[in-house]
Image (cartoon, rainbow, N blue to C red):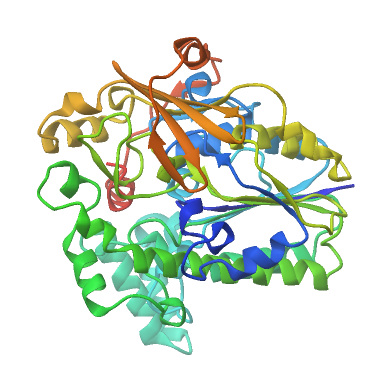
Amino acid sequence: MTNILLIVMDSVRAKNTSLHGYKRETTPYLKQFANGATTYQEAKAPGVDSATSHTSIFTGYDVPQHQVVSGEDTLKTGHSAWEYLTKDGFETALFTPNPFFSDRDIGLGEGFDKKFFGKDYDLPFRRGLNPRKYTNKGDERWIDFLYDSIREIRPLSSIGNGLVMKADEISPLLIEPHYNDRPASIFASEFTKWVKDQSEPWAACINFMDAHTPFFPKRKFDNWSERYHWKIQDKINPPWDFISKEESSWKFEALTPLYDASISQIDSSIGRIINHLKKEGKYDDTLIIVTSDHGEAFNDQSRVKPELNLVHHSIGIHESLLHVPLVIKYPHQNEERHVHKPVSLTDLYKLIKYPGDDIGMVDRLLDESPIISAMPSYQTRSDGMIDRLETHAPNASTYKGWAYAIYEQNGDGIRKHIQWENRSALVKIDGTYSFRDGHPDKQILEHATKLQDADVARKQTNEVTADIESRLTNLGYR
């Protein structure tokens, strides 16, 4: 049977990958992998953040249909492709530090037998005891932990870990963990150890967060930044400093060298994973999908609301947020192929849920259904985001309403029809560049505005803890 591996490079836009002709060699391993795979030159993310896009990929529903638009929504059980795979006898695993899987469970973790979030890796001393393993011992846990620490070979390392965790309990804001402190290499290592022990069939999802703000590439990948790039990052709080106009958008654009280095860091781990599968003899029989859930805006002017210069993600419908890399190696494929027709990541659901055993599966992404991307109105999102926008934005109504984009092939080019509240635009796409080109076709836009709620989501009733609130804020989702 066919094995399945989905690799999601969180926040990586196509424009900044050398796979798509970028000026910096950010993805050499991905380019090498593509030599024996199918590259979709015009892949479009269904949403502009992790929650919306991952839910579409896992369920096959467009964002207006599934309505999982914030950390306060939950995907109901029974709708994820991974649940179907588990029932069909696949061994399944998830590897990611993404808080929408690890902390604020919105239902995306359903269907995975193993889940690895790398939480122990934010402790300062890796060889010391992990105090989190004592959390089920009630009030006596710290006494037991201290007793065991003293008996350890490295007592100071263990006690140091305990002090860090205790400080984090008292005030999560004192020690602010960054998901990027859990680099791709950690999750690549865990995956290679797991897959080595698997008999077929197996299915895994890896979500790398290195290219999500804030950017902390390791020194060996930090080939393009200067010291002042790091200083700028230390002084800003994206996206809110820019929405409030407290900071100029060019400062976020200045972080591009750090972003590029973070992409290179992910790329290195992708190369490691591919080589491991080949070494273990598990490459040919595996459907391998490498993509991104959404892109990132770096001072990109909105085509439909030109008064907005977009930074970060979650807000906007720009190509910098929606045009993502997509390379698929179908089972037993060894020849390079390129597809220039626009495709939606929403249709990856059909590949994951019903894996075939040859390259004939390529046709599942090339049906005639509309390619729809959407940004939910900020009023439908979490209370935290609503409060932030209304507090920071000089004119919060600018961000009001859903935004939709529908793509169509037009001769040798691609046209993008956009609707955002009462504004619309027609955009022509040429590779990684786009420009306004008249007015959209209202009949085409109706495909998006008439989508019905599929009733696969429910509102969460669980209280958001201070720790989760801090982590979501750190990533710019609050």
